Structures are given as C-alpha cells and as structure tokens.
Length: 334
Image (cartoon, rainbow, N blue to C red):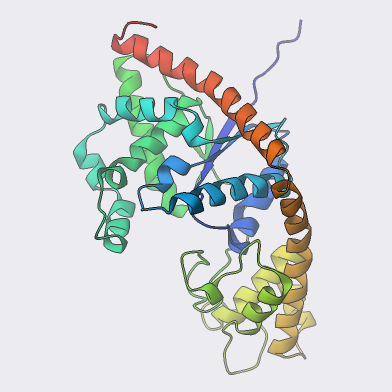
C-alpha cells in the first residue's frame, strides 16, 4: 500500500499597507502560482501586523479586500491555496502571547527593522512595533511551515523564529517544525524609477514606483519620467548606468528575453525607444490582472466565501499546534 507523502508547507504573509508594486509582482507574486501544485501553500493577509503603524480604518478594510482580490487576480486557486486574513484566525494572537514569554528582550532589541521603523514613526514607538517579530514567528510556527519565502530584509526575523522554536522544543519536545528559508530562483530586482540605486517601494514618492493597479496612462507617465543618464548609450551597467539598467531588467523580466539580447537590439536606438518598449510590456502584463481584479472586486459574495473558507481551513491547522503547546506548558484543556 502506497503511503501518501505530505507536501512541504509554505507560509507567506503580505501586509495590506498599499497596492503591491510591479517590483513585488516580478520579484515574488508571479511565481506563487507555480508553487501551488508542488507545495501546500498558505497566503496570509497580515492585517494584525499592519496596525503597528496607525491605519485609517476604512482604508485598512479596503486595502485588505483589494489584496485578497489581487491574489486571486494573479491566478492563485483558493482550492489549492489557503487564502485568509490573519485577524480571522485568533490563534495568531494567542500564540503571540505564549511565544512572548519564551523570547528575550535582548533578542528583540537587536532587530534592525525595529530601529528603522522607530526612526520613521518616532511619534508611535509602540510595544507591537517592538515585538512583532514574535507575532511573525507565531504565524510561521502555528502552521508547522517547512519553508518561508524571505527577502534580505526578513532573514533576521526567520532566524529569531528558528531560535524561539528551538528553545520551545528544548523545553517541550516535538512542538514545532523548525522552518527553513525558501529562496526561489533569483528574479529581477526592480529599482525605483526616480532613484534607481534603491529598490522600488510603494512607500516612496508616487513617480518612483508602478503599482499593479496603475492604468495605462499612469504607467506611460511614470516610465516616461524615469531617470536615465546623459550619455545616450543603452547597455546593462548597474553601477554606472543604474536607470537604463533598471529599465532593461524590467523589460527582460516581462518579456523573457535576456538582457544581453535586449541591449543588442537597442544598440542603435534611443532612451525613448527603450522606455516605449518597457511601457508596452508593462501595460500588456498588468491589464489582464487589472481586468480580473475588477471582476473579483465586483463579486463581494465570492470574496467573502473565499476568506471565510480560508479562515476555517487555517484555524483547523493552527488550533492543533496551539493546543499541543498549551498542553505541554501545563494549561488545562478546554
């Protein structure tokens, strides 16, 4: 009799703090569809994490539901993937308290993102901002995730998660799976259109990034204003020609052509030609996603069925882990 081998589980959380950028799409989101047959995938809209920074309630609700619609619009199948709002699974907050009691102040004080965010939000340095790596650790450990997609800025958080899991397992054996980082094939690193030595970010000035929901006219305007240089030569040279190199990277990522072949094809052309090609490829990529997004946003009943079902599926997994840890600690079972 053949034994069914459980797929490795991947958990990824996305904050509803604004519409994802073209950089988010190229660097991560477009690859998620490729994972759903090979892995057991959970995608969490991390609304609890979002409130470490003050949020406008109506805007938070709108951005959360839009992000869910976007996940569907890029092709994620809610039958194959678990799509849910973090706040709909109360085990996240419960696990956060338990793990806070197994995490040391010194560990939290070394987190570089706390220092960075404290500098940006000096009027609101709250306890959640200080301890949110523990909430993140709980997010991962609740689902016994084997793999967690991590960027360079999240490596430290994965390490503290592993440290907490090992500490708890040392006290109460066999509670948590120790997660590993998931490092997909390196995609293009999309840089700011206005400061091409920095990564594209939705928190920067509007002309610096392209949102997945930017319409064709907006895309044309932003790429037309993208920073290049004055020598007029189209070649890939990130150090000396970061703006031109960024446009070539975007075009390569969207068309599948190599950067070398693109640079060769533009050898006798100007920056305007390159920007036109990047504009066309971007619009061609985004318009089908936007069409699908608008269809999902028009069907609120369907979106509600997706997030309710997702929360139920996530809660079943999370409750097993939470109950196991609470029993090990010594709490009386319900």
